[in-house]
Length: 253
Image 1 (cartoon, rainbow, N blue to C red):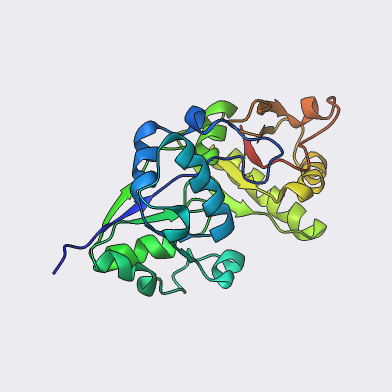
Image 2: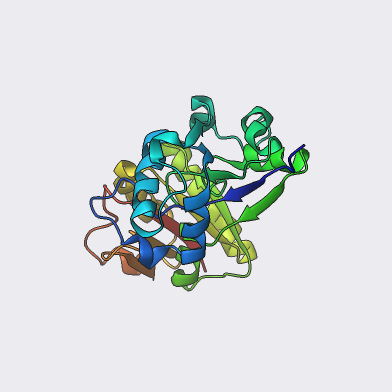
């Protein structure tokens, strides 16, 4: 009987859905690309975007098999919509190939799978099955934003998405600000790009003048921007985050 394979957590570049792409060799280590190129079985968030990613990998590191021969299994749609971080989805059937001796790759559309993206259920299932889990090196937008913001990097929390409706969103912003001011803990959150402007306006209207707000957009891309100012300072600045580029927002002291 073949020894079980390993589960590799393969980061993807942060330019998914953006008008421009960063050269893959600029943002992905060679060792990560080499592992990605040899994997023939994948669990992914989206098969189409994964194929596009593997085409880019193939330009730098030839794939072990033709792209059409590589097995791609998508996570269910409900995992995309509701997340799989609370333990409600059993991903063990997706790992059958690893139990047969094949190494498996886990990939999301951008960044590190299972970090602000689906995939934690697969990692949890791999541990339950006794499989080796190997995280590979690559871009993680939350940590890049935190490092570049100048806020507390010793105590921080990622809180996902804020409510879409104005009143609950403002209430959540006040809660996060209170926590940041009371504990010094930096609060990180994200939004779907086309709702960036509404979130930004709510932040400027709700946060106290002395609270610090950071915004990191287009990370790893040529037009990347990171800025951190007090709310009073931001209100003197024109503009806000773009509506077509992923952004990370941070509130702290």
